[in-house]
Image 1 (cartoon, rainbow, N blue to C red):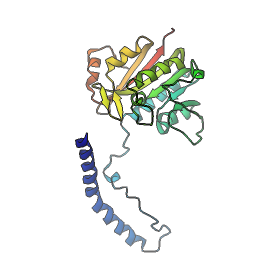
Image 2 (image 1 turned 120 degrees about the vertical axis):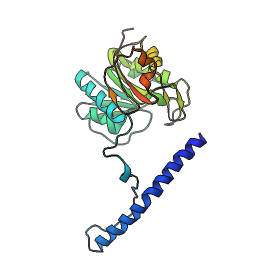
Image 3 (image 1 turned 180 degrees about the horizontal axis):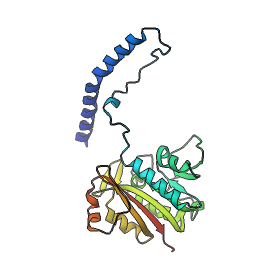
Image 4 (image 1 turned 90 degrees about the vertical axis):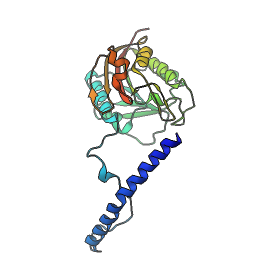
Length: 255
């Protein structure tokens, strides 16, 4: 762990050393052009020194493709009500809110009002009874892998992901749809960021309670593969992913 911290720190330092000369040189060029006669004086300093070397339209790993895809699936399926557990507000939730109301539940507070978004702060590992069978459509995208690791102030619980999934199953009405995504690859915990799940483990968790309708994934090279067969031998090795993203669309079975 210490070695990884040192490696990340050295990458940041080296990036800063590489970018600083251009930052300083550009500052003096701009200052000379302004020459005290511009409508836009320099008010303060916010060194965005790494953007020069970033790829155009750089995307946050997994989230852009995942959020866009699941939002499109919900649009096509057009449920009576859609609820979300812990997904990105500035991505997936925003996409869905652009065309329909969405209710979100998160352990973290949300103090601002967002059009078409209703918010409830709750710990999903302790399910409020009024949420039982309260929706016909629910999503949890890149969220469940965090439960019980303390990253967001939640209590430490080695089985937090299982408790969260059990409670999500209670929230969905029988016949309702569950959209789930998480990291896929060799299974384990990356403390205290997240868990990585094997596809076989997830299928074993889901099959007693859901019919898996569609499985898609994003591989380690950020390539998206839609509606693939999760029963193949390739799925047993997580389609070669070390840190991919598996996306399940499932129908809750009738108890």
